[in-house]
Length: 202
Image (cartoon, rainbow, N blue to C red; front, side, top):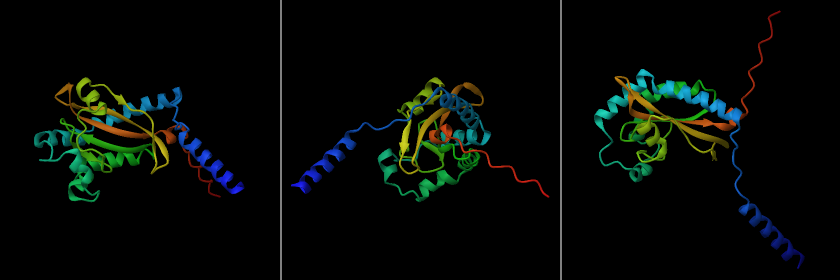
């Protein structure tokens, strides 16, 4: 009977944990202030000549023929179609900028005018983002978009996406694409301390 009672208690405890509401990351005013600074930085990335040129070139070609989100999900991460977006000039530029963020930037992907991909650091879950707020708000209204904090199991960290329009250099009141960047909230809230200064030579 004691064993049965212990099993019941264990099951009840497990059920209680499962039913416990998921903990959420609270964006404090201090964290939001840092996010606002990063939004300006992302806008600067979107204005980079190499990024703009890549979007303009993709807009001339249009989305891959026959490609939709379902087919995109079926592609292997190391397939030629995917790797092409990770090795072009814009992708290398984004990778360089992301590396300089010291872990704050967790992802970055560039979209053309129809929502299709132009470049990214890692394969995205969707090929076409048109119709989603992260694309439509920057592209149609020229407004920066900020998503909700989400927990990333792979990195064991909270992150939030922000997106900005890629503006037409000939007409700054018109968007030609959208840049989406993931910000590591855990890193923003608890930045790594600066490395200690080297000891003076004796």
